[in-house]
Length: 631
Image 1 (cartoon, one colour):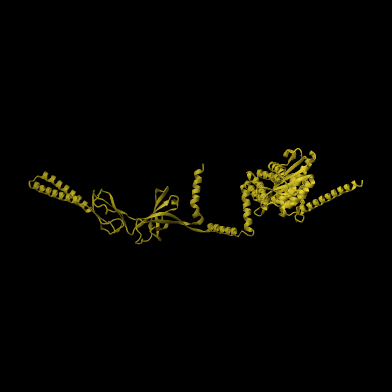
Image 2 (cartoon, one colour):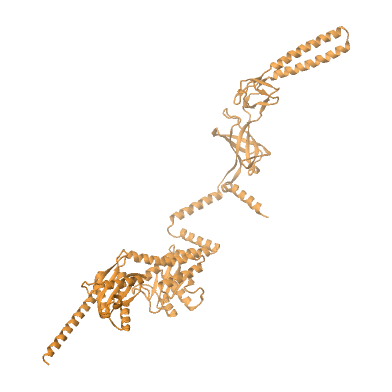
């Protein structure tokens, strides 16, 4: 008895020491788990704690995704002494590939029937739905019920690794995730053309993505809020007690101009939430939050979210909702404005403009408005001379044409268009050789008839004398005609003037026909102005009106004139009709003004409002166009 007793006591002592060392290691693991700074320290302590919870763990590993890469690497082992872990690598890779928990028997995995039966468990670690790592353990054989309990412990314990991943996640990546969620929710607001449809889709999407029982969208009309959409409810009763409670909660947040969360996420936030408390009592929800929708610094509506009992709004969710509300406000106002009637839209625009003009700031808008008012007042009261502009040409008051008296040839042409002439000055001469020969012939013929007359009188042949007398008269008539034609072979100026057309200097010896116009001469100091007035303005022109002429060659000089004649004959030019108006120059023209010069003439009509002068052409066209389409 005495020989056995020391052995028993020794065994008990060793067991107590091992148990005490295990408890101390377990407590140290918890302290390290609470104070761990790096992922390796956190995962090592977690794996030790998890192994004690599961029990019978002979080997364990934690594999996580390397930041910024697509590769996985182990960050913690249990126990820490190195050993062959190829069997855990296989089941871990399978869990990463399948994205779910995996359980395998070691005998099945390695085919070692002579060894003690064991199990391998692996469970993936997810973050925002993506696999970010895996946990694998090797445990002793146990009944199926206990095996399921071990897998459940491993599943629940992996949630701490998710906390680690979130704590050490890239802040920019988390911000991108929140931004994507906010944009996805707001995108549904733009998909539907009608505001009610897009608002219903928006609230439903937001409720689904954020885990809310109900999301309501209200629009501010005057001082009251009217609910326009409720998630998962295409139709709802506006007068229901619940709807009125939601509207009151929205008005409470709008009146304070702040986001209202009840129960509050921070106890010291100075907001009133009585209406939200009443909403939770009415809807039996767990928490509610309302976010005002702003556009241009003004509240246009509100967004109220409700979660079921036992669930509250955390800070990341509130940040997402605030981002959604800030983007949704302008979109809601834009889509609602597109469906308003024209009078309502005009009234809102006028009200907004008046607020900007009467309120502080907007200096540029106020200066611009003052300028527009000043211009409008100027146009309403200022008047000016209404004048009709027309293309004009200077013509001679009398224009004499010199034509060819006979069919002949040009012998001499010393002057041409642009030369000034005096009365009786030689301008050109025809070839008169044929006429001179004809004159000699007729003279000879007349002398012959005279001799025959004398012979008949000497012989007292009265009948013959009468015949010869007639022949003499005929010859003298023909001779007078030739003399007249010879006199016309010299072209002379009928008065002092200017040759405005005609140039025979390059046509000497050329044949001309009788009646062909060779030169045109206009007086030097007696001009008239021919104006081509558009048919749209001809009704304002009457005889006696005054005007001024400016020619292209002398744009700095003005010549006054008076309308003398309005002709009823029109001419088409460039697709428009023009009437000829004649006017006489009031003063003696200077030496530089010549017939044929062209310019612009303006006929003074009367004094009229400047706004009418600048717009009457367009208004006349509009009247004619409307008249053409009237039945």
